[in-house]
Length: 147
Length: 147
Image 1 (cartoon, helix red, strand yellow):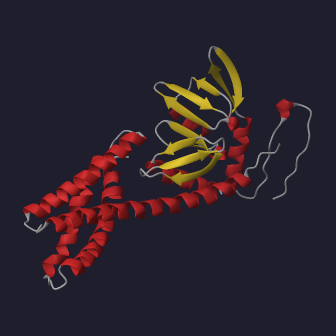
Image 2 (cartoon, chains in turn yellow, cyan; image 1 turned 45 degrees about the vertical axis):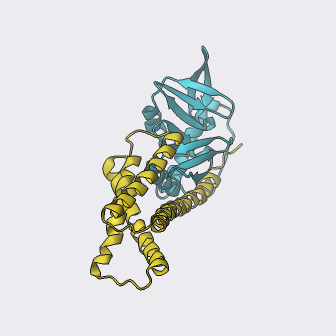
Image 3 (cartoon, one colour; image 1 turned 30 degrees about the horizontal axis):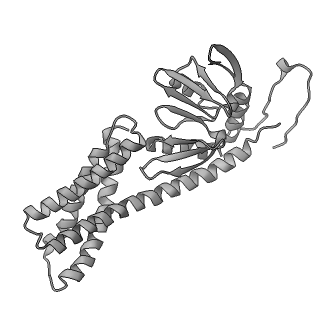
């Protein structure tokens, strides 16, 4: 897969799913920790910025050659570490991290969103596999060898 | 569609005739399958050469500069390159599933998503082969097109 295709299929899809997950996460955590807080229109940018930072780190998964299972797993772990590091560093530099409990909650939220993205991709793959399997069965039945 | 089978005495005179109003994908598919049943390959095991039918091949694999054909019980080394086999047998139910594998759709049991974003091809002999994500749309098109 060339880099452009990888970028559109992986990074852009991940960005869209991440925006949804971040809005959901912000709503739940906001209601738990700062239910009285009110925001201006600029708040709409946060999910976009964080999803962009998060999705950009997916680039570490790109490879022009075929990755082995072990390499692919190692890159997944590296991506997750990068994701946590970039987002938490960004929040720290912006002065938005106020306490240890908030840091831990956000780290957990990033983990959950990451799992959510993988779950969505897996469900999509499962659907593709089911379509192929159903068509494959018909194809093979139509071409039963005459013994 | 009516199916007629007439016994003849000479193997060399065996012939399949399809009488149709229009050459539909179904007709093309029957033609491809019939051709693949009759195709015989020559491969090497140790220092001896053997002939085997293309239809018995589960998959072809390229390892370094060598190409191997795997049947249910034997592994033959071939002189051809993987891309040559792909070109020669792409209309005979053989499809590329990664850079190193060419699999026989008629010997494919099912496919399933793997956790690392790729897919597994579960072959009818119980073997599992990795399908690269980039080849999944091709497989889908081939399988759906052949139904």
